Image (cartoon, rainbow, N blue to C red; front, side, top):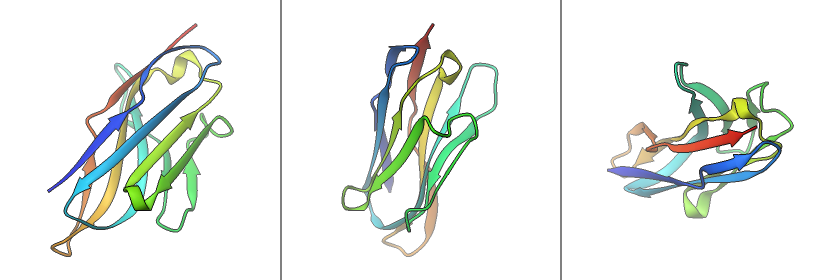
Length: 120
């Protein structure tokens, strides 16, 4: 079993910054891609950023130049540095990881979500 625990959400004024963290624990053999998604009230969950095992990154157009995704394989963790936050960034943010477990099979795991609220 693998668990993802997120932290770092909160309330911030427009133009401010937050750093989200997500750490995996459990029966982990390796982790492939790691990503961050978000879901605003009344909207579908959308991809924010993803980072591959090789370090390649991809971002939603709406966050390019403002958000940075990174990973620490030794800590089985992924981070999202969010700068120049806007009210439209308000959402619940979820991390996910493509984890190969000790059994040899790969599964997609999700964090519990952390609220980010940006006030104008």
